[in-house]
Image 1 (tube, rainbow, N blue to C red):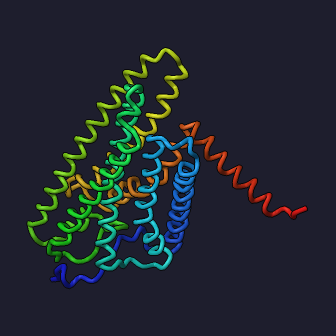
Image 2 (cartoon, rainbow, N blue to C red):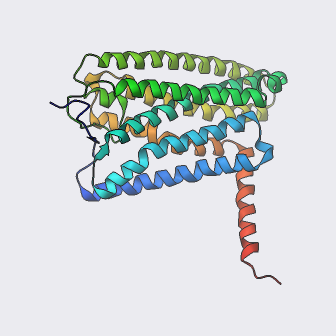
Image 3 (spheres, rainbow, N blue to C red):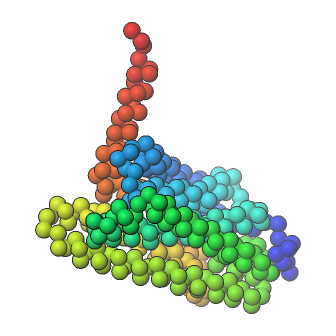
Length: 318
């Protein structure tokens, strides 16, 4: 029997033993990863360069894109390397780092999504007080609180998880190091301590979810009172993508971390984890940009400006 002090590496779950399917998985993840890098990178660059987008809503969207890039970069490159080199091993400290950063990025993202729901509530329901309630200083403080909460949660859960004695082998039934899968390797009833912490975190997350729902109930009530159909469309097109992101992210993440062990299996856990750890960060820029005309115009202006500059630089001088 081994314990956590003797474990030097973990073995991650292989999607398949067939070499051709491993390479197919590599190319699929590579395409998703590049799409996420391109989409989130464009949003970050556009918002940072266009002074017309220096508002609280786009400030939070920029932070969300940074978190998306961090979260997908924590899991997907390692999984791609495993597929390409036909390996499953990850070092003990590499696993610790993955658990920490996965929990940090996703906790911070959920906290930021909660803040963004408040931003939309104030913008639509209390527009005259928007500048007072969500000025530059308040926006920075809210974003810092979201990142700080993510850091504290990640530190607490990572330290607690890897302080447990592990004697059920070193095979993790997931394509990255995930807390519920690490807990399965524990040989002590002390794993209930981390399970309890996850439940407390779930209660906090549920409180945030209630806050988001109440915010959107107020938003939709205010939108329905808008006489202009164009105004209704603009408000709904801004808010519905946010609600869709929250719903997908929360439902898949909660299922992955809170489901009963009796219904846990690789065939079920794997697609759920892919949804919240890979698909959501890649879809976020697509969802937000397609439904936001101002952001689409700014991205197009940035791209055409860069293209024109490249043409001018490549053309011979008179």
